[in-house]
Image (cartoon, rainbow, N blue to C red; front, side, top):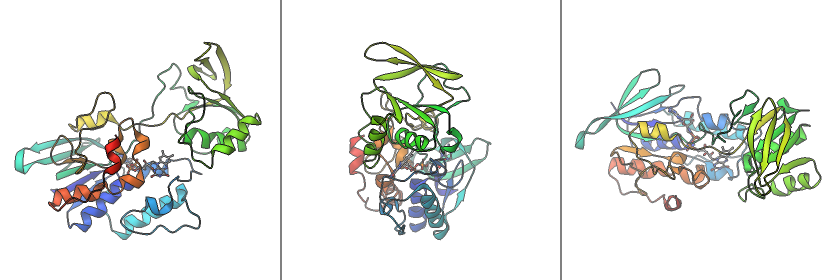
Length: 336
Ligand SMILES: Cc1cc2nc3c(=O)[nH]c(=O)nc-3n(C[C@H](O)[C@H](O)[C@H](O)COP(=O)(O)OP(=O)(O)OC[C@H]3O[C@@H](n4cnc5c(N)ncnc54)[C@H](O)[C@@H]3O)c2cc1C
């Protein structure tokens, strides 16, 4: 019987492990992939929008030569921090469900993995993020082999026609990298411009490439069907349909926490926003003893919770578990 089981070994789950260890609790982190699996699966050349100090955990400095870390630096950093704190984790262990095994004062949980292993804990912290579930378009052809919801690196796409759906950071970064790797890129986006949240240093770069005709765009348009070698789009203002050549289609329309997993664990969600029911100070859900931590709590508002404001959730959670005065970490969470 562990005091705490933490589901998810991303930055926020690791921060929870550090806080649990500091409080002298027995704990185990269960991670379905490698350590910080989501970051490992980020685009290889990705640079964080946060400064390095804003994604530090456990009070361990994150020195880099510039200001903002890239994916590789972050992977090195979190691995080293996990080693420094001798964190207890079990990798490549996917949790299928969490069930209360007793009620009242003695509440405890059974955490069952997809391979049927079971772990017992007095408290459980869900820190499963949102990167496993893409926001799908729900159109015919979305599951064809030349379509992906994850972009990794540009060279696969050189000298091919690529249609990118979306106009957020992921889409813009991919478009710029692909253009520079000699891919022919068309961005299709339902609004009339790139998203306002695009990293400020990318905006002039992408807009100038569009102006020069090096990256093509279809704004106010959406993809209605994907077929081998092409996509069909429709202009949302004129209704005009267009066929675009597409050797590859990158659907980069964001990700969303896995609502089914949370429901399987007994956590209630708002039907519209998919935000779980949880206390804004303690992060305890409708099930006493079961907590949400990090970006998993964001529902559809994934742009509002990130490492910067998610890494401290565990402080409040562990305070609540140990009965200490709760450190206030939640001001940004009021907004979701
Ligand atoms: C491309 C990109 C760039 C970003 N840049 C920034 C940035 O600059 N600054 C910032 O603050 N945030 C940024 N974010 C957001 C932030 O990085 C992520 O949201 C961050 O990784 C969140 O940490 P987390 O611990 O909440 O979730 P994650 O890092 O996603 O960790 C969740 C972990 O849970 C595991 N998991 C999921 N389901 C299960 C299961 N059933 N059983 C066991 N394990 C499970 C996953 O494998 C994963 O390792 C970015 C996100 C993306 C996609």
